Image 1 (cartoon, one colour):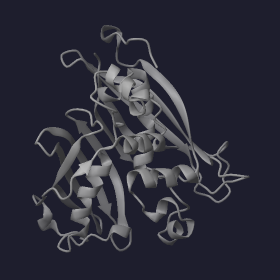
Image 2 (cartoon, helix red, strand yellow):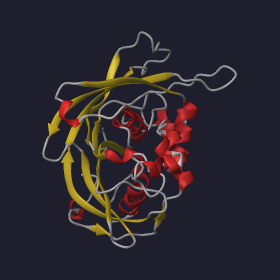
Image 3 (cartoon, chains in turn red, purple):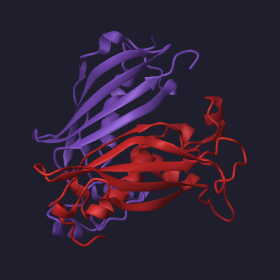
Image 4 (cartoon, one colour):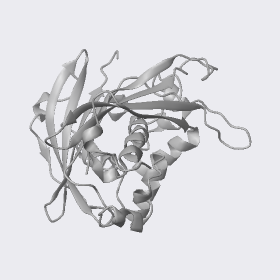
Length: 161
Length: 149
């Protein structure tokens, strides 16, 4: 949550923050149920491999939906997001991992900065950089794997009251 | 090309109405790890001036993907869903989606173009209330992979 944002103090290049979002297989099942997107590439390893994916991958829409929360919490009102777009460039691989329960096996890193200010419309465009570790190789370690850009041109336009 | 190019300009009329419920908003918000109180607490949403719980910015994908299903299921389109990759997505909100909305979507096929042996299909869902108020426009591009892609 934020104190009130003062539109006149916002300028291009300002950073709005950073967030780490952990993902487990259970999170993918939860998103499948909530969204109605039951494509088995998001929860069934054998199926994912049968269509030449390295493993189960997150829904692109889960990554997109989770990433914008940085913007929502910064601006303080989910209704202020008037436009939001992205391209999906790399899949987010979510390996199987569990102990006594299903555990997160990867994490998104989201950073946001102001890309443009429109004084007439009283809107700002927040540009998001979203990465996840490259876990396409079996047994890859999320702590040391290269970070891949999974969303490109992820931009949210928000209206400032 | 694995998609019929004659689809461009085709429109699929609204099918069933989608009733936006509070629990659907809460479930979707939890699924995208959206903790903002306006998704969960009616009083918090009203304090921001909304009529009821506010849906997360990507909630309209539920309505849009139901509309997309009409296109994918159209035998004239020739789309093999197991070969579809989501390439890009955009949401333009004319106003926020809130609990209690009764939404319908009209789907428009804006572009079909060859990409190697595959095809890129760009569709647009115009989402409005049953009373005709514009709520959101969503645009998505799907790549239908060709034989060797």
